[in-house]
Length: 91
Image 1 (cartoon, rainbow, N blue to C red):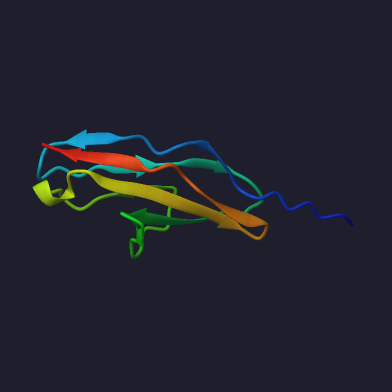
Image 2 (cartoon, helix red, strand yellow; image 1 turned 90 degrees about the horizontal axis):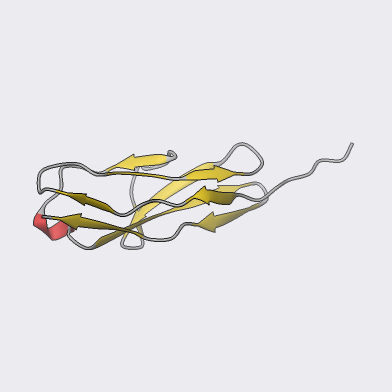
């Protein structure tokens, strides 16, 4: 039996978001590859605890979140790939 393991590929990158202070922002990614796929979202390069799904919704934003960078690493048995940064703009 030949088992082909395909590393993840991101087909839709997270998009930049603009929100008003107090609103939440939702980032999402679409990826392909051998299941199961594992997700880990990051804010400014630091892993976000519990943010392990294909989408991530922030807590209510504050002015301090303006310019924050969000990215996600998608991994499986064959490897991993990290998305582009999505920029959060808070008014």
